[in-house]
Amino acid sequence: MKFKNLLLLLFVSVLTVNVRAQRSKESATVPRPKLVVGLVVDQMRWDFLYRYYERYNNNGFKRLLREGFSCENTYIPYVPSVTAIGHSTIYTGSVPSIHGIAGNDWFNQVTGKQTYCTEDSSVKSVGTSSRAGEMSPRNLLVTTVTDELKLATNFRSKVIGVALKDRGGILPAGHTANAAYWFDDLTGNWISSTYYMNDLPSWVKSYNSQRTIDKYLTQSWNTLYPVESYTQSSPDNSPAYEGKYKKEQAPVFPHDIAANKTADYSAIRSTPFANTLTLDFAKAIVQNEGMGKGSATDFLAVSISSTDYLGHQFGPNSVEIEDAYLRLDQDIAAFLTYLDQAVGKGQYTLFLSADHGVAHNPMFLRDNKVPAGFWPGMSGVKTDINEINTILEKKYKAGKIVRSIFNYQINLNYDVIDKNNLNIDDIKKDLIRYYKNQDGISYVVDLKNIGNAAVPEPIKTRIINGYNEKRSGEIQLILNPGWYQGAGTSGTGTTHGSWNPYDTHIPLVFMGWGIKQGRSSHQYFMTDIAPTIAALLRIQEPNGNIGNSIEEVMLP
Image 1 (tube, rainbow, N blue to C red):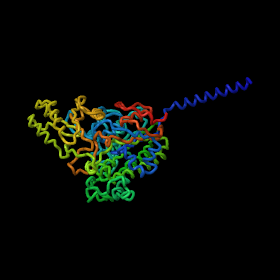
Image 2: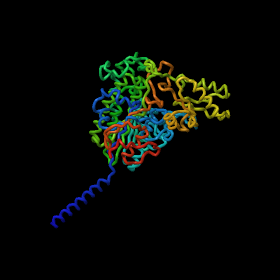
Image 3: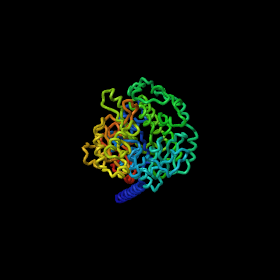
Image 4: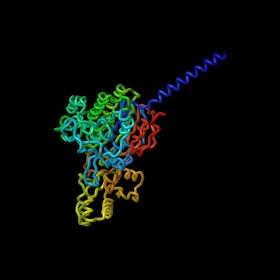
């Protein structure tokens, strides 16, 4: 009996030692996925997940919703809602007030110079003789979650960004990326800049030399299914709402892409084939760079841009947009299948989101008895800047006091104001009085005195979050719901940039390693994406982060 007890005690002791050894071995490595993929669809409203749901295949958007976790009420917490800010906010967990990307373009309030979000004259193009490569992330003032991953792994992680638009590839990849690639209209190639490299990798050169783009530019774009089956859209021929290709008589399928090709390759941007091109190149990145094969987690940031070009041209109620999303659904399905094979199903984490949404065309809304309109008072669109400057000049005896009206903000000419010893507060009061009386404007806000503005939440917070003193104007204009900048009553297509749900309610779906299956109706914000990925990876959140990790999406 004593011998049996002794053997049992010995067995338990050995088992305990083995369990402790196993736990010690497991805890020696921080559990992380092999690869993180960020997939941002430009101009994708949240409802597009469900608007065409019945026609999606089982392995694209439906798979993401079925296997992943969808945060159904995710919003953009700032204005203006545009591409560069959206990509920056997703990856920094921050807002323009902090991260500094105050628009796709902005006016530097110190120099008065208009600045493009990723322009950098200190770098050179790589892969083209055009200036399209003179870009970098240097205007971004904070770190991204991709930067933090590099720092956390002592730069062993590989980070690469890719998008048709330079800003869609550069800003998500962050400051420390191994590479970022974007499309060059002049050559039809994927290019980069000397910020990242002095020459394109041999495999990128080889990929470009295959001239896949030529195949897409020599074919017509017809609908995947009989056009009469596109019941979620307006009639195919809706010229009052839809813009046509330059060499077309009407915005009607089939679209002859070859006939609309210009001297360069820019025509590809306004076709759904550019989305296929982007995701095919993303696959090539994974394969040739060995993404997900190293000793540390890698990160691939992909932006899908053609949905934005097509949306601006045709509007969200067009057959073209419906067909573009049905095609994108197939492309995403193929991309997920490729990741399953190349990295391993369950070995990567992917999130899908958008940089902003999109408004309906105001004439479309009016024709359907919904209040809407075009506001003409923006730079470059039948602007009233000359009119307001004439009014101010009569009172203050100085010309060109207003420099521009941009991003729904009024920028003042401080040189003129200082030279003539004018009172800026008096000028702003006159401007506020003038714009309050214009049709289509809800609020006119002095950005430096917003605390005293009678503006309801959450609009006030979104204005504050979007205001960067060195890169934003003096006065913010908030238009009525359904209104946006446009040319009178004849503007086709659509745009975005407002605080309204159609522009700021975005999809957010996580799927893969470490992610639960399910959905939530809790309210979250775009700023919560980066800290959620940081928490999943057990790394520091970006240094300008103001968001919170979404605990309910993650497995314990």
